[in-house]
Length: 375
Image 1 (cartoon, rainbow, N blue to C red):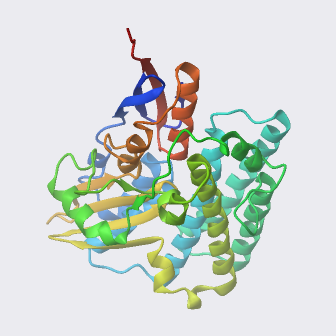
Image 2: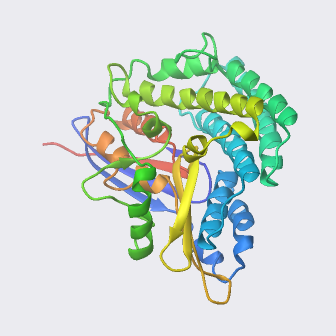
């Protein structure tokens, strides 16, 4: 079973014994050498290049790059640019969350709901781009922002995201999707060990010092997770379906981002505080002529790290994507799957695919199931 998302894939091979996942192998096949494209360029070129070559969550990539470059040069990001970046980051997180849930949901929706969500997704893209486009210039118009936010709110309601409360609106696409998993007890709940700003210095130090860290990031003694479920840690506990908790965390995040955008449109720059910005993005200089930027994008905490040489050009560049944590061979996805009673054949593939989609990878997923023969 394959779900296409973008360049590269994650191959998940599961060995099943008596309906239980007894071994899990995760292998990422992603484009290599993207970071090398930045080396030798002028620092100011990096954000646009990041958005161009890393099109998924492209605005988040550009903001992380911009922060890395500014911190490498020991320069601050201006207040107006931060407000614009915050608006764009929230808008992109809303659209990418909705897009991933709708496009990659492994169970079909009734035809009438599929038609509605397809139309809504196109409207959500247009409304989010109406926010991201001006945000890319570092300026936003409060009236235009308010209009685009209102359209996003309308689309979210049409898909089933309530203005209040955690549960999706009855009869909606989100309600139908939740019904597919609400009684699923295949996977046991686990409270996520969230990757946060508190981890940034250690992550950046290891990213710079350990050559393979970019592909296999780890923090000693921890099984780190990042993304909507980790940000909303309360979803990690409690009775009920683990998959449903993960799903509700995702739609809850859309509702939260809509609230942040609505507040931002109504308050303006003068009321924008350090705490609000810190929940979205941050950065700092690194030893030598370097700096990093970290952004909470749709799929989790994204890092860019840049170094500027004596010639004024980029001498090193590193990018660490959220998917590398969640689908680490000893990461939270594998830990959740291993030992779970997933069944066999198509049933097993469906369970693995549902779990994978709700861990929200940034590349396509391929699932292979092998059953152990017993005498």
